[in-house]
Image (cartoon, rainbow, N blue to C red):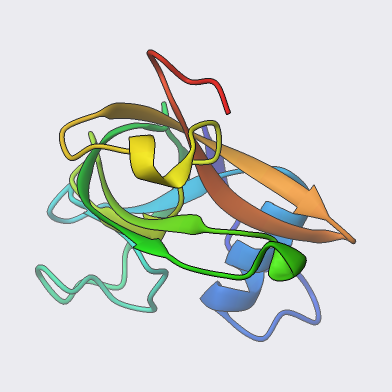
Length: 134
């Protein structure tokens, strides 16, 4: 599914991307010239330089490429993982795997993206596909 990239009052692709997340929708840009996906949102394709980028829905499946645990006091929310996720579409995102304890997230684990909207602001999170219980 393709969406129009801008609406009146928009300040650019990053603004559009955040508004889509705020509405609970996860989209990636795909280049019409070289057919490669692009993330983080850009005005031009970093692979071929084309400006023919379209917003498309995607399946959200990926694999944990790297993970680290950020130690925090329990009063500050406790430990959390910071993970680099390679999406099947060929882009890498930094996020966290939310349905596992931080120490249980493993490189090579399969995950699925979702958007969590809190206080009107959308954030991309991932859940482990197998063994996900917090």
